[in-house]
Every structure is written in structure tokens, then in C-alpha cells.
Length: 540
Image (cartoon, rainbow, N blue to C red):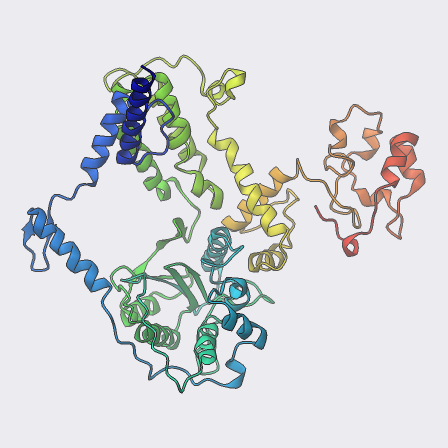
């Protein structure tokens, strides 16, 4: 009997695994994979992914499975065919182009370049390099678009979105005995130089966001390519030559139909038409980079129509009649509310969009079928409470933007060597802790400022000169703000007072003031805190 029961359990587990693999759904919980709804979902997923017919190069359509397979084989064999590269236009190598000796020793000892990629590739290359994330590129490009929006430069600027027909490369290396391997490697290093792209005629490509900050000429993240330059015919020709050389070296091709060029507001219309025609790219007023909308105005609800459509499609595909209340709650919590999470992290999503998605979740939870509206028995705010507090564990989207931005803010604040940190510090002074309004603030600055406000409640300050730290509302004694303590602190005297008021001219504690404001017991703890750290700068 036990053996039969074991066989039954093993068979049921295999069936559950088979249905899970067939549906390719990760949100399902243990025990739900053999439900009627899940079987319907898996079958619908398979039908949606099935290819019924293909169109041949001559325009004819075919639904024969054998011909469909043949067309797919031809397509990918063409993509991965062996190609002959052109080396005639390779640059001449000089001694200064060679990689350092210590790096060359690593190359000779190991095949992997991972230990030295950070020093070889500039920060404009974000993918495949350790400790570099997509967040920096997403925020930098939005800061660049703010420059495009508000710059009054009459010559104008342009941003090129390059789409490659084949984002992968098949490489067959044949080493020439007359060209040392060290020089071949140094070529790849030189092509990713941290300096802006050189025009070769004394000028430079790239756009300078603010004075005293290096130009940003390009952003590369995997196959997402953006190139920035001043809008001029000579720069357009230079960019086309650089791209042409790259395509000759790698045998890749640029998809001119999908590539686009975006110009700044101040650029004259005649110049926009001239450059777009010269390069053969579409002239657009908006584009996407890493899934983020890039526009030359304030973001509106219409820029997030794709997000709303995705949410609608999910609720329609699920099919309400197959689900219990617990099943609908599971899908809302794990799938529906996560749709705008990426955009909420890296840009400012209008509250109307977030409320629309929450409204879809409410309707999906309580509406029994398409013909009845359904009664909302519990308020959405209550459903967003944890389960042990009587809720369903939903997260309110509006309350999540601050914590999501806080991670980015801390990353920028704690890494002064980041290009994004240098740009924001030069442009805004890194006064993200203050509530003062910034004139013509970019979306990037709004994200960092919002994240800093969320961080302010939980970080503890190290005192430098005390000018940035509020005595009552910032955390600098132990791990709590003073205005939340049940203490006998003289609140009236310390209202809107900075910590520097409690310091003397040498940035040491003024014992008399500290004792008058905090009393003897608290004053001892305050004066035990070190001051004038980090060269007199307040740091979190």
C-alpha cells in the first residue's frame, strides 16, 4: 500500500511539474498547478505561442509545418553565417595604445577579462561589467534629455538611437603572426576609451550637460546604443563613418528603418531635416532607451499607455470565471502590481497611472463576471495591510515610489566617482536633502530627491560642520530623531536649528549650549559624538 501511495505521489508531482513547465508561469503556488484555471492558462499560453504560418521572402504564405521549419532554419543559418571582415581601415597602433604590462600579464595567464573590465571599459559601457547597473544609464540618459529640453544653444544637439540588425556577433579569430596578440587586445581597449569619441579633425563628439563636467558622447548597454553630438553636418558625417568602420570590422549591419534621431528643441527645423535625410534615419520627437520613455517635455499619462495595455491584457487573459478569491488575490499581488515596478524605479510615473492599475486590481478582485460590477467589500487601503494585520499583503503603488527611489539615491550619494554623481553635483550641488524647489529640475533629479527624502527617515548622519543636519528632524544621536523621543529637550529653542549652532568656531561642541538645550545626562552623550569628520562635510 505504501509503495502504491509513493508511486501515486511521484506521478502527481511529475504531472504538476509538466503543467508548470508548459505554462512557463512562476507565480503559481504549491498545490495550485492542477487547478482548472491553471490548465486553461497553460493551454492558452501554448496556443498563443504557436506559429501557424510564415511569409516567405517572395511574399507567399505557407502553413505547412515542414516549410515553416525550413524557413526558420534558413533565417538563423543566414544570421550565423561566416562573414569576412575588412581590416584595411583599422587604426595604426602605437606604443601608447598598448595595454599596461600588469594587465597584459593577466591576459597571458587567464582567458577571462572579468578582473580588468572595469578599468578597460569606460562608464558609458554599462553591460557585462561587474558592479555596473542599468540604473546609472537610465538616470544619465534622462539628465541628457533635460539638457535637450531646456538648452538655448542655437546650433542644437542630436541623439541617435542605433538599432543593429544582428545584435550578436559570430567571431572567428585568425591571428596574424605579424600582429602581436597584445596589439589586437589594445585595439578593443582603444575603441572603448573613457574619452569622448574623437572626430579625428581636432573636434569632439558628445554633449556637455554642465560646465566643468566631461562630455558624454555615447551610452552602450548590450545592444541599446545612444550617440550624442552637436547638431551639425560634419558631426553627422563623422558618426556615419565611425559606424561604417565598426560594421566593416564586425560585419554587423545597422537597421536604418528602426534607427532614429532626436533633436533638441532649439535646433532649427531645416537642420533637422537636412541631418535626418543625410543619415537616412527617422526624425522623432520621443524614443525609448532601456524601456524608459524619453520626451522633450514633462511626462504625461499618454507616455505610459503601453503599461496600462499590459495590465489590461493580463486581467483579460487570466479569465475571471476560473479563479477563486484567493487565486485572484495571488495574481494581483505577484503579477499585476509588479507591471509598473521597473518604470517606478527609474522615472517619475504619474499617480493617475498607478491609480489606474490599482483600480484594475480592485475590479479584477471583486468583479465576478463581465456582466456584473461586484460589491467592494473591503477598502483597497485595508487590503494593502500585511496578512497578520487583516489585509491581503498588496503593496500600494503610490507608497512604493519613495523606497524604490531610495536605493538609487543611496547608490549615487555613496559613490562620488560615478559619472552620474559628478553630473548632479556640478548641476544641482547635491542638495538633495533640502526641500527647496529646483528650477527646471530633470526627472533624474526628482527621482534622486524623492529617494533622499525616503532615506532621511532611516539614515544616521556623521557630523562634519553640522550645517546640513537639523537638530530635531534628522537622525544624528543613536538611531532616532529627537522630535520622536519622549525627552525633556528644549524644543522651542531648537526648532529649525542646525547642528552647527551647537558647535564653536573650531567645530567642537559648545558645552554650555549643549547642556542648556539637552540637560546634563543627554549632553554627555551628545558631546561624545565626533565632529569635523570627512574634512568638515556632513555625510550620511
